[in-house]
Amino acid sequence: MIRRLCSGSGLGLGSRFGGVRLSKRFVFLILLSALVTVCFGAIFFLPDSVRLRRFFLLPAEPQRTDSAGSGVGLGPGAGAAAGSRHRQTEAHVGPARRRQKERPGKESASEEIGQEVTERERGLGGLENGAEVQEASKSRYPPLLEAGTEPADQDARSRREKVKEMMKFAWDNYRQYAWGTNELKPLSKSGHSSGLFGGLLGATIVDSLDTLYIMGLQEEFREAREWVETNLDFSVNGEVSVFEVTIRFVGGLLSAYYLTGDELFKVKAIELGEKLLPAFNTPTGIPWALINLRSGVGRNWGWASGGSSILAELGTLHLEFVHLSEVSGNPKFAEKVMKIRKVLNRLEKPHGLYPNYLSPVTGHWGQHHVSIGGLGDSFYEYLIKAWLMSDKTDEEAKTMYYEALQAIEANLVRKSSSGLTYIAEWRGGILDHKMGHLACFSGGMLAMGADDAPTDLSKHYMELAAEITITCHESYRRSATRLGPEAFRFDGGADAVATRMNDKYYILRPEVVETFMHMWRFTHDPKYREWGWETVQALEQHCRVEAGFSGIRDVYSSLPHHDDVQQSFFLAETLKYLYVLFSEDELLSPDHWVFNTEAHPLPVIQRNTQEQVITNDQ
Image (tube, rainbow, N blue to C red; front, side):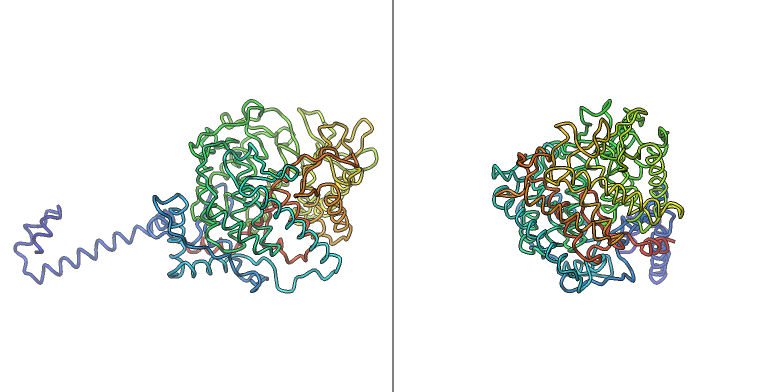
């Protein structure tokens, strides 16, 4: 028997065994087996052992990436905060339980990814079943809030309850008249579709998941989760905006996973992330603006300068794609967005500014238009948030942010004749004295980054943040509805007011209340809560209709016409920021959470977790 095994092995040992006694044959086989075992085991200590271990063992430990020296740790476990100040409380530990269903026919991509994710999770500490995996996942991430964090102030408590009632009203009407579509048309009492999502459906549902959960609307969250499980389908044959789908769908699913520990949301987020990856298949790695989810074919907007990609779109994928690597253990997502930075860092910036258009083919700037509002805004937001989300280890993001901020202040920040500070737009060296509603996020951004600025600039940036916030509040106060226009000007006698009809509309945007929320948290100046409450009252008076909330076409008319769209970001952002504004600071503490640009909270990737990964690899 032994001779037959050896002669058939192809090792040429059969004749040698003929003269060896039986006992010696066993000894020889034992030695040979030991040698093979040692050689195979040595593979795991080669320099590329991280990738080999991932392939063979499917571990749950985070993996390092050396891309651009970001220092961001990757893998499902890296969101843990050892020694976290806040502990999970019983009121907020229970994830929605995923119902296990037998599905006939061929397995979907979601199920395949789900199996892989489960195998990775089971590699952690010998976990043996789905419940244990879910419990482990839930315990790794920072708490939503501490016990006993109801607002101490009675006015704040009642105002927060009012915001919650507005959310329930918006959701209930969407549920009744537009369920499963992307958005609600509250006057028509029907669903609204947007070209941003191709054939992808359920934008309001996915965008609202974390808001429902945070506000404690449990039944509404349960039905939203059920829709995601049974109806959210990414195999649509249509072009979607990579940017919009990333911030709304991927961000919403990731946030829901981190808040609840429910594996369903993780699996869906990874599946959608995989669908978006072909957008990066360009000569430079700068992603296309649009991607067909079925074919993987990408292109840019026809109106963009020379077929360019847009700065705010290509620069607002970082948080979500880093977290996709975090939850999947696969570094490819983070590598894609780190490559964008490499391209940007090679380019010469006019006066230190980042133009809004960049060719994905040549890697050169398009038209030299610079804006902190539309087309540019969230690129700068994601630089400072990448620094904060990395537990302040992503030095490259920090450097890029403060250098950009210095160029913005030198070239774009101006004061009006009445003393209002604003951020103008720059068109080939000529200033356009206009500031968009979208640019009003910058007050909160400046406040977020003030603490880590060079010592001599920290106070200055907080003062600048306060000045920008005053200007944006003035754009609201100077309208008949006490809601702000899409853009307002500071020339020709205008001062924080819109002068063109196509700038006078308000579509339930969140940027001003977002800044009120951040400024309240950093200063506790009561005026920011008062300004937020003014906005709540204006929304109730002018935007609330019989079946939801609608944008208005002219903020300067006391009897405004409605646009008949309840935007999904109204539930995801505007109402969430208002709710947080009237809550205690422990709710989604900035020590542990960073909001993506759609207000979906993502956890800080703790430094101690990253250091542990490096130690383990060494």
